[in-house]
Image (tube, rainbow, N blue to C red; front, side, top):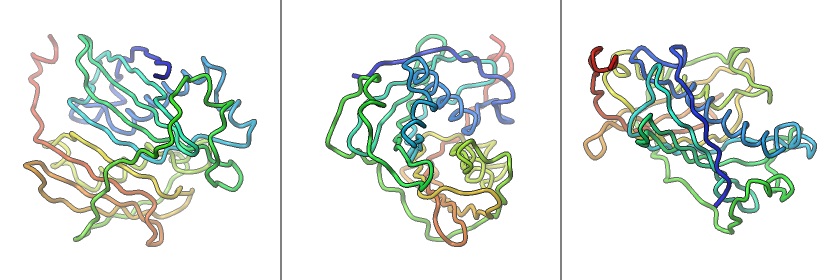
Length: 255
């Protein structure tokens, strides 16, 4: 087992949507900060990794959701660098409520990428050793993402605020594009229970992205299929399962 790092987080109103639930972009930004905080404690922050001409890049998220964190709720966020092989590093995140109930589990796949040529590099033992992760030979793969058959699409232009320090679109921003196309009525009626997302290519400043999507039924839930294209080339894809949202009364929330 790798080293675990845990710390509480109180969800501010600006991290939440109109339903009072934490948004995916805010959620993923916060959990990635937790991994960064652990790395800093182990003297393996971004500056250390940059000495090798490398930077961390996320290639996959798989998320199981029991309940989304809510506005003003204090949750415990835990992360562990689980395992690694020659090319991939696997890190998990868990979010628990005030009494220890698990709200969600996030399984993320990271790679080390060359900062100049943007090509994937080998995992360097000197970088990964302090996390005490298990070294494995097997490549762990998320379930295959179902392809879109009957597509709808909406276009967005990449803004300056969408770009992170790597000068490419921050991974959390993709969720704005894939969720916005579903519309207000859908997003105030349904809540996600599972997300499987794969990042294929980086999106740069000024690009026009097309958020392509399709809705269908699967095992009694709604399945939405998503793809982010630039000039007709896929840059990310995702499947999301949804269930009807259970509205909480104000009285219950205030207790």
